[in-house]
Structure formats: structure tokens, C-alpha cells
Length: 137
Image (cartoon, rainbow, N blue to C red):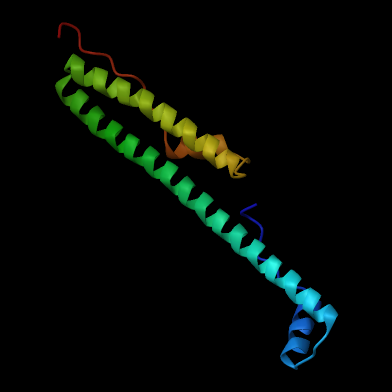
């Protein structure tokens, strides 16, 4: 749906508009004009829907980026301290990232990104292994 280029209006539509501009008064031209108005409303709605879908996908991607940024931060913290609570925070955030990445895959697929969708998302959002708390802490 999103990958389709904008269609050029048919030649008869331009000719009909030219007749209208020249002052042609015809029942048939009026019928054509009414269908143009409907078509232009449909095209505007299609464009608005596509824009909203793109915005929603961008929001889903932004949420995933945020969750992965938090994961990076918690990983640094956990590796420096090896505190069991920091490791647990990292592992919990890792689970949140798995869910965020999955939601992004689903959202992209719903919008028509089917070829290599999983691979593309997984390569941009790799999930690190779980951390283990240091023994004796």
C-alpha cells in the first residue's frame, strides 16, 4: 500500500477540466466534476491514512530505540558493579526489549514489510545474552 507511486490523473480528466475552464456547460461534464470531487476526497483520505501509519510506525521504532538505550545503560551499570540487583534490572529490561522488538516486527509486517522483515529488525535491534550475577554477591 505505501510503496505504490502516486497515480497521474487520466488524460480524460485533464481534458474535462480544460472544457470546464473554457466555459463548457454540460450535464455530462457536471457528472464528471462530481466524480472528481469524490476521487480527490478519497485520495486525500488515503494520503492522511498513509501519513498516520508512518507516524505510528515511527513511534513504535522510537519506543524500541528508547528501550534498547535503557538496556545499554543498564548493561554498563551491571558489568561495572556485578551487583545482583543491577544484573536483575538488566535482565528484566532485556525482556522488555524482546517485547518491543517483537511489536516493531508485527507493526512493520502489518504495514506490508514482509521480505526480510524479521532479519532487518533483528539486525538493527540485537538482543544480548542474559547476564549472571557474580558468585558470592
